[in-house]
Amino acid sequence: MADNWPEGLVMCHTYAEYAKALLHERTRKMVGVRAEPRIPLAIKGELETMVGRVLDGWANKAKQIEVQLPYSFKEVLEALKVPCKENKEEHLRRKFGSRLESAQLVDLPTVFVDRDGFIVCWYLPGAITARRSEQVVDTLKVVSEYSHSIIRIPRSDNWRDNPDSFAQPDKCVVPPGHVNLSICWYVQGRGPPHSLPAPSASLKETPKSQGGPQLLQELTYANALIGALLSLVHPDLFENQIEVLAELASGRVEVHGRELMDSLFDSWSSPFNGIAVVSNRETPYHRDVQGSPTMYDILATFGTYKGGRFDIPLLSSRFNYGPGTCLVFPGYVFEHGASKTDGERFCLASYIRPKLAQAAFPNASYYEELSLPNVQDLATYHGLALPEVISRNIWGTDDGL
Image (tube, rainbow, N blue to C red; front, side, top):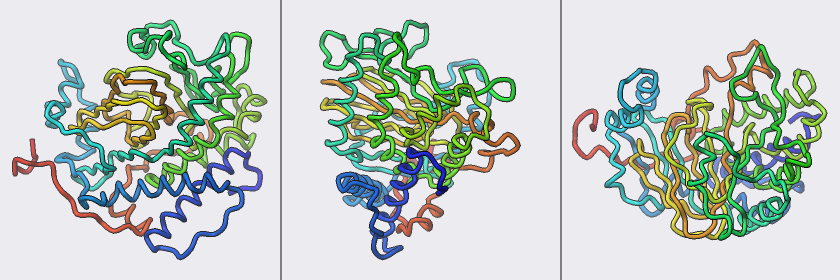
């Protein structure tokens, strides 16, 4: 950790190192956790909770199982590249044997592993504490009260802005809407070397766009906690992202809005370069095509609602998507969607736009050698025991389809 890092990155890295130490103490890879006065006691408790859920997901204490898929992640990537006349998602569901219609509800912490041993998804209910959920909801209430709040339903043809997908405003404490926050990104459709990245317009306070910097500042703790989770489940991606963001903060990279970006970096405590804040929206099935195959997204839920469901058809899984849940998977590859709820649901969706690495390191193929974590490698890194594997191949054939 460099001495000249902005406060946000220092917090992100500090929380991650502490979370890793907690995990290694639990797996007996190390003895004791060094005192860390920069982390408040209450936050240490939240990190303890998160580490506990990761261990639950790994071992699944009740059953000692993980879910192994009957296909490889590489096969899905290859299938995505092949043109087809029919609907691409329906084609993928048939090809890889999606059985979502008959799937049981997943409600225990679970790890999904492909046929080659790569971890494609973590489902971690209860990873976010009720205390943190309450703080995030209170923040959204305050920001939504601005006359021109950044949390709103934009007028566009994008499916994300379809009014029919949102709850009725007059029945919500926090009005429905969404906003993307980014410390630095390329405007959609643009990229290196012909344009420069810049902070998202949502983080520039104007009379017509209010609450962005305040929202980011109030989410500092939540974003650092989510960043710590990434460091546990995909250590290489976490370190890569910290390097990219540190280079952007150094002043050596040409960007638009340098003064604004520098002022925001003390509050940007996430290793991700984009965060979508979503209020009271049902999300139809989709893939996040501006991401990358080997980069996890993390979805974290907040609120006091009931009845939330989240589907990933290629995993043949429907998840109990209650408050405090974290789902970790590459949204670029796996189609997914979230149902309506009984009560108000809020989500922080943390994601990475890979083009930004080209701005920080123009001559480096920064993510080309990055892969999803392998079970064996992650077990070695953290000192985890390899759990018993139970297969979803109920047919007894080699391909399971």
